[in-house]
Amino acid sequence: MTANAMQSSSVNRRPITWSSPLTYALALAVAAVSITPVVYVVIGGFRTTPQIVADPAGLPSPWVWDNYARVLTQSNFWQQTFNSGVIALGTTLGVVLLGVSAAFVLARYTFRGREVLYTFFTLGLLFPAGAAILPLYLMLRDLNLINSYYAVILPQVAFQLPLTVVILRPFLSAIPRELEDAAAIDGTGRIGFLWRIVLPLSRPALVTVGILAFVASWNAFLLPLLVLGDASLHTLPLGVQNFSSQYTSDTAGILAFTSLAMLPALLFFTFAEKQIVGGLQGAVKG
Amino acid sequence: MTSTNPTLDLAGGATAPPAGRRPAKRSSYRAAETRRKWYEIIGLTTPAVIVYVMFVLVPIGFAFYYSLFRWRGVGPPTDYVGFDNYVLAFQDPIFLDALRNNAIIVFGSLLIQGPIALGVALLLNRSFRGRTLFRLLAFVPYVLAEVTVGIMWKLLLSDAGTLNALMEAVGLGGLVQAWLADLDIVIWTLLFVLTWKYVGFAIILLLAGLSNVPQELNEAAAIDGASWWQTQRHITLPLLGPTIRIWMFLSMIGSLQVFDIIWVTSVPAVRSLGASATMATYMVDNGFFARLWGYGNAVAVILFVISFVAALIFQRFLLRRDIQGAVTGRAK
View 1: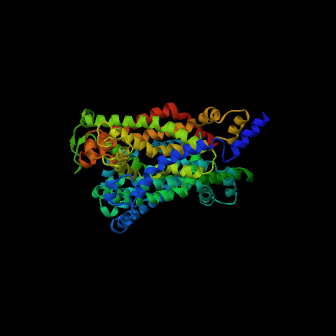
View 2: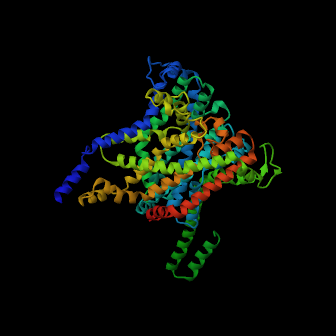
View 3: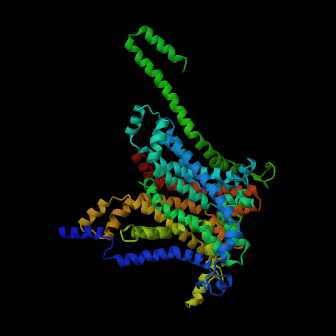
C-alpha cells in the first residue's frame, strides 16, 4: 500500500509520465485541429491568387509579401484598427467603472432591496442582447447617435454589465470585513475604502472583466453593422467582411487581410490567458 | 429628519442626566450616517442602472410596441395590425426553417461540444511539459472574431476551396460536397464551424472549474489505489457539475441568438431560402435590410420570448442550486 502510494504520488508530480506519449498525441491532435486552418490562412496570405487557384493546399513558392503590404498601405486597415481600438477601450473603461461601482454597493452595503437589485442585473444574463438589436437601432437613431462611437460603446457597456457584476460581486464580498473596520477606525469612509483598498485588492478581477469586455467589443459585428453605416467609422470586423465581399476574386488579399485582423486578438490573448482563466475561477465556483 | 434631531437632543439634555445625552447624539449621528449611506448607494448604482435600463430593457419594451404595427420605419408607426405580424411569422416556411436551424444548433452544440470539451479539459488539466502552450493553442479559435472565423471557413469550404481540393488529392474525390451551397448540408457545415469556434469557450470554463477541484482529493484517491480514470469519473466529474451546467446555459443562450458566423459564412441566397437562416439572421434580413420594421420587431419578440422561457426553465430545474451556492457560499 505504501509503495503503491509512493509510486502514485511520484507519478503525479513528474511532468512526464508513462502515459505521456498518448497524452502528447492527443494534445497535438487538439492543437492541430485548432490552428491548422489559421496557419493555412496566414500562409495563404503569402501566395498569389493564381497559385491558390491552381493548388489550394500548396505552400507559397515563392513567398510573396505583396498581399500584406497592399492591405497595410492601400486599404482602410489602420483606420479600422483605430476605430476598433477606440470603441473597445471606451467600452472597457465604461464597463469597469460602472460595474465596479454597482458591484461594490451590492457586495459591501446592507440595505433593503439589495437582492432585488442584484437579480435585476442578473436578468440580463437570461436573455440574448441580440434580440433587442432592431429597437435599439431605432432608439439610437432617434437619439441622433447613429454613426458615432457612442452608438456602439453605450449599448456594449450595457450588454456587458450583468456578467461584470456577477463576476465582481463575490470577489468584492470576499475582502475581509476587518480591512473595512480598520479603514473606518483610521477615519476613512466607505468611498475611501473603495478607492484605496478595494480597487487595488481586486485588480485581478477588474483585469478579467476588462479583458472580457475588450475582446467582446473588439470582435463585435452585429451592432456595428447596423449603427456604423459611415465607412470611415467601420471597425475591423466590418472591414474584413467588406473587403471579402468587395474583392471576391482577390483570395490572397482576403487571406492577408483576415490574418492581419486576427493578429491583435491573438497577441492580446497570449498575454492575458492566465488572467482570464484565473478570473473565471471565482465565477464558476459552485 | 434634520429638524427633529436637534429637538430630540435638546429634550434629552433638559430632562435626563448628562449621560442620557449620549444615546440621543448617537441616534442623530446614526441618522446622518444612514442618509449618507443611501446617498452612496444611489450615487454608485445609478449610472449602471440607467445605462442598463436604457440600452437593454427599454428596447425590449419598444420591440413589443413596434411589433403591433405595419411600419416601414419612417415617421411614427400608425398602421396598427394587432398580432398579425406574429401570425405572419409562424406562417412563413423560411421562419420555421430558421426555428428548426436554431434547434439543431442548440442541441448540436450541447451534444457535440460538451463531450469534446470535457475530454480536452481533462487532458489539458494533467501536468505535462508544454501544457501552457497546448492550452493557448486550444483557445485560439475562441479568441478569433466571429467574422474572421466565418470568412476563413468560407474560403476553405467553398466549392473550389481547399477542403475539396485536398480531398481530391488524397483520392476522396467521391466525397466532395458543395459544403456551403447544398441546401441539405449547409446547416451541418455551419454547426461544424460553430463547434470549432466555441468548443474553446467550454474548455476555458471547464479548466477554470477543474482548478477549483482540490488537488488533495485526487491525491487521496490515488493513495487509495484509484486509477487516473476512476479519479476523474468519481471525483472530478461530480465536482464539475456546476461548471458544466453554467456552460450548458451560456451555450444555449448563445446558440439561440447566433448571428455573426451564419451571416458571414453562408451566402444571402442560401440564407434567404431558409437552409441556413437562424432567427437572428431572419430578423435582421427582414427588419433592417428589407425595412419591414414592424415585422422584424415581432420576430425579435419571438426570439426574446423563446430565449427567456428556455432560460427560466433551465434556471428552475438545473441552475438554481448552483447560483444559490455561489451567492450564499461566498457572501458569508
